[in-house]
Image 1 (cartoon, rainbow, N blue to C red):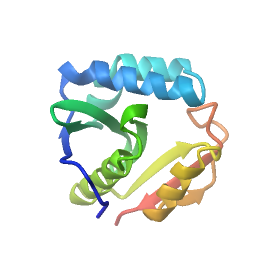
Image 2: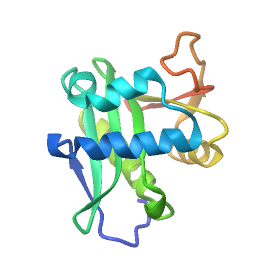
Image 3: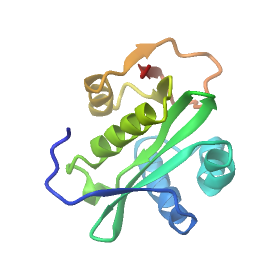
Length: 159
């Protein structure tokens, strides 16, 4: 269990919170990379691109404030991509991202996901370290992966 120094609640997607999903992720992408057309489309229409096809979006709530978000994008019947995780700078350092990650892993186990995959970039050394800490292993990155900025693909086998 990730140590937590705050009361954090993680809730499923609500359409009235979709602006947080968009704004937090745009802020993160602009800080570390750039916003690709695919990102903007998914972030503007999360119900169409994530929820309706069978995916999930979660929000971390502290004192009635949204302080983080993450999505599980459905790829196949039991394969989901951990994506669009973002925590605003003022809330970083509180292990919000790790708590969202643990929530997604537990959710995947409970719902019998076969595996969770993710795409990232090796310059995000802390994130890669955390993914490895939670059991993700590097696998081959396909040439036609959905993100120009990705240079690493990882997976966590759950079954």
